[in-house]
Image (tube, rainbow, N blue to C red; front, side, top):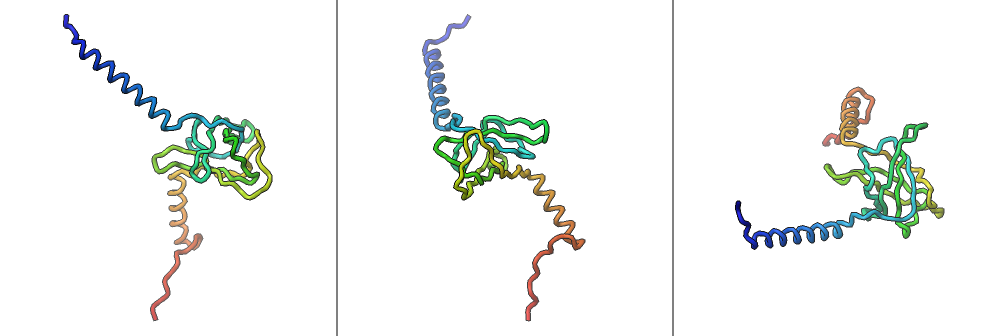
Length: 164
């Protein structure tokens, strides 16, 4: 039977306490708490991996949190519920778009406020939405445009005037 050195035990305990302090600091600094406020819904055809707890941002500033999503059984569209901070009053013509936070980043909802004087009330919905555009969708569109431009069906590339 091997006896443990008491110094090793104390050192192990100190390492565990420091690790716990580091985790507590990282949690508080990362601001992972959900934003509480009033609920708003938006309907999308494709959410592209948006998850519960994802950010809702205006101009890159976090103003809300995705609190839920479900499939509408009649229209087969995704209904996303968000909690928006109480101090942010969204105009009625606000647009919601699902975007990606970089190439490998997570998805979030980007809100673009409009100019309407009327505001979206608690429990209201955002009527104007833009669905998630995946990288595969964009590449497919580029290939489609490139193959159709040779057939006269697409827009042609601008040409440079001939030198005189």
